[in-house]
Image (cartoon, rainbow, N blue to C red; front, side, top):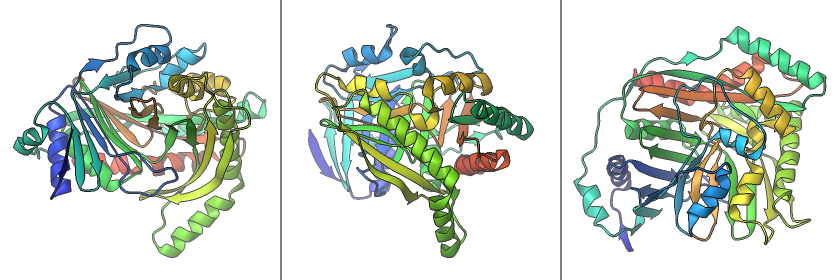
Length: 418
């Protein structure tokens, strides 16, 4: 273990990420210094592989628990792990072919605290990073194709409103996918460009063999600190204004929009139920409801729900009983997941799953994999998705526009690369 001061942190980080990208697996997490209730991600870079999780059991949460062995683990949970928690299946088109779950115990871990870095490794990591050359080659991603066109999207929203009217569900998160082909890829530079366009408190870069996750997520799925569990669903979005006055007006409009408030309240109730399954009776509390937070691209309405873990429940059972997150499904959860499979034309894969890290003592922090670009360097394909919560009061055209606002940073990133 070695702590070192860094003189030029942006340059050191860029070199460190290029060095990390030379390994089969790596994961980098950061909060961009954005203040957030219970803080964003810790800044950590995990590189190389001591052990890789190879799931073979039916219950992959349980298998991951056995794999943990009180070591640091880094990786992601794909949306389709829902099939382990409920009697569900997935057979839609999959453009990037991500494994449904991937975790690894790293050889080298770098913990950043401001301009200091603590290195846990048996090798001269600093020396290796210093010698690394920055690859400045440009990425070139072909223009994205929408998996469904605008007219089909509007017609599906009407059908979902009908399901709500008929009492099948109260709210459903419906997503659309954009995909395309990669001509040339420099994943590190692409991630750094995305992070500049859209800095977020749950930003991450992950490589699992040929699969890359570049995430600018503003949303926390779930965090565990000792026995405290924290979940912070986002429901409610407005674009940023062109002036301070317009910005303030949009924030006020979001805070008083009855549809957005109802959406947020429904998901808060769902999260309370999810947390109650692994928490001490009476410990589930809503600490903040309808908080308005501003990011570079959007204003978001965020609520914070906390609870205390029951002693007879493992860290992995906490994750399993809340997965997938209510903000990306809707309510009631099982029914809406069936409808999502029926109406979405593509597999969600890692999108709307969760990316994060688990410490040796079983503490963890996971984001919601939204505002994220997924790359497959072997098949030279990419995918990203955007969605919104549909309620009976939804206006299809407005929902479509909301998806476009959420996809804006990634679309402009791709346009810059062309």
